[in-house]
Image 1 (spheres, helix red, strand yellow):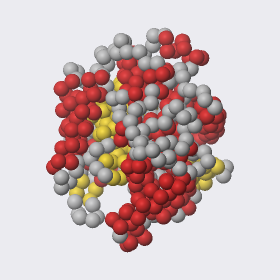
Image 2 (image 1 turned 180 degrees about the horizontal axis):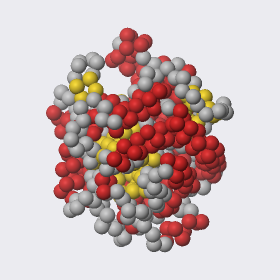
Image 3 (image 1 turned 135 degrees about the vertical axis):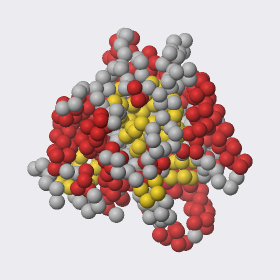
Image 4 (image 1 turned 60 degrees about the vertical axis):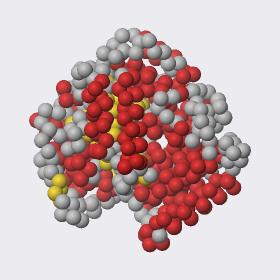
Length: 532
């Protein structure tokens, strides 16, 4: 058993190889960061809830008055490392070993390996993810698939690695300090940085991070404080850690300048985290009847609040010398149907052309098969490594623009889509899989969040469908039952009984009809993982 600092307890040391990453020195580093910053994290989460009360009473998100000077003054972020200058195509995916190798070999410029929305945070997944990254930087990442004997090796010139730790709202249940769970984000960040910073330097790269789910510049300030303290503790220069921030919450869209400013020594860009952004829009405005969205399929990037936020992100980033990253193409290649595959690829192409033409410096894909098409689009548009020269000074984005509701239909089919995707994703997540192919899309936790939040809002406001029926609990339960019956028939009794479908249905239904729109479904779902 690894010796932990006094007051720290590891509740499960049964994961093979855990001693490789949870060394005594690493635990001391985690302990130091958590004891210095853990309580501040909790206070900021309380602030989120207080702010939500204001939104529930009709206050709308807006640009903060107290930071007007930051928005109006001239300043730039610190210089950006050479290997992050060209990010025209980024691939994302969980931290499992085969995915890490395939993504690094995909031909993308960077790979965001994910401890967050595309990873189910079982303790085994968390630890094995850290082991995989440890082995990567020790040149020991080779892998043989036990199912088919296929060998996986790293190619020359792999993608640049960026790590996404979990968000501020998540805790790691398997490590406690004085009987309290620690921050999951601090844990993910600390373990990776502690073990790999020297090897990263020796290989000509650095500790690069994608930071998710922030709502305010104060939450960005906390991450900056963590970075500064961690670098000092490890004896590495300030500014070594570099971060790209996902703008995937509605309040954060009004504070992009401020977020860049708080992290200006460490930040290299912002990213349009579009799926979580839709979820946040619904959640933060859930009680306001003026902001009810149509079916998810009709909430598209080129229109209304999504278009406004994307353009503002480009304008803000380029003004400050930071990169503006586009959003996720969730499509995946469609087997056994050339027609459907061509449709999927055409959607990706159109989406990426919109981003490139607007001025984004790069974009996200979820599958190696989409790297070539995204690369082709950005290769045609980019003259150099990026589009920092695109200013968008002629673009003005107002509060009204950032809140503009998408037009479209609200249909029974839209409800069915929410239910079948939401239930199946939660089931997979409970079973330990965070990136799930469903209906020709690669879905992550944001999918389930959108699904349950949209149904919750439609129920709350007795929203009329286009056929005249009103969304109420009776209709929801009727459609839920119908979709469950169909899913049972498709899967068969054996798969159904071996899976976690009943629990997934229970969670989805409970959160859809809850008296309040809960902050995150992954919080109660995590308790199911911990207790199983």
